[in-house]
Amino acid sequence: MNYETARKFLIDQTITTEENSDALLMRLKQGKPPVPGQVTSMLLALKVVFAGLEDASTIDRELAYTLYQLSIKTQQLFTAGAKVGVDWPPLLKEDLLRIAIASESIFSGEWQAYHNTK
Image 1 (cartoon, helix red, strand yellow):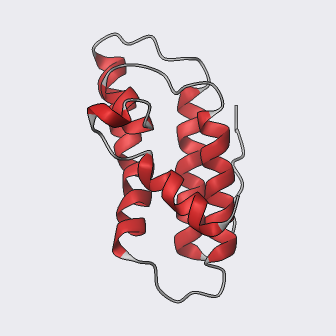
Image 2 (cartoon, helix red, strand yellow; image 1 turned 60 degrees about the vertical axis):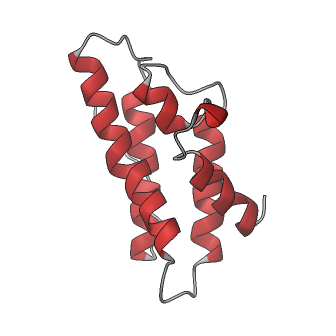
């Protein structure tokens, strides 16, 4: 996966239209878990984008908004779903945290790993 492919993949995960029903945000809004392999692909794409922006001093607005949505909006949708009784997969909360940490890494310029403290 190259930078442009990874960037487009991440942006596509935040587009909530009927034509894009498998986008992560759309699935979470509908109370559905990610499709198999979706989180793994997103983490790979985030790592590729991180590497692609290693020497960059700015991030374009569309990508920044995508990273915000993947970090914050996914957490909000997860919490809202849990409050109304959605039975999320057991590791989804940790997966969303990994996505948020990877997104934060892109902003900070330093890759941060997820450490489960349980």
